[in-house]
Every structure is written in C-alpha cells, then in structure tokens.
Image (cartoon, rainbow, N blue to C red; front, side, top):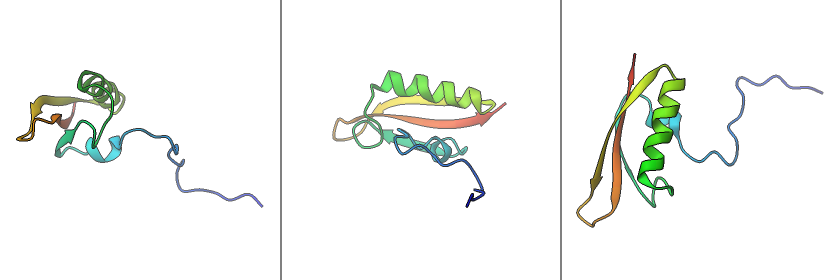
Length: 78
C-alpha cells in the first residue's frame, strides 16, 4: 500500500549538511572533518546552494591552531 511522506528524503549520498550549515548561524567547517573537497570547491558549492535558497553566503578561509584548513560560512537571506 502506498504511503504519503511529509517530505522528500535526502539522498543517502548527500555530501554536505547544507540545511544545517546555511541556517543563518556562523559555522566553522574543517577540511577532512566536515568536507573532503578543496576549500575553494566547498566555497563555490556553498555559494551555489545559497543562491538557490534565495540568498548569499559570507565566507572566510582560515587555518586552526593545528594547521587544519577550513572555512567559516554564514548564510544571508536577500
């Protein structure tokens, strides 16, 4: 028997947690822990996703005390 779902399920191979990371809060993402692509690729993907959500994303590349590369992101609605 068919079942109605509340929303379309996320793909099991969804790479990043955009719904969480682009919630308007400020997030520090660390390469290797939170994403595996290059930081430039992650920033491009974040900008693309933010645009599709009707906004933009602020970004700042950084390195933590251990030398791990990462990026700070914040979604801003237009």
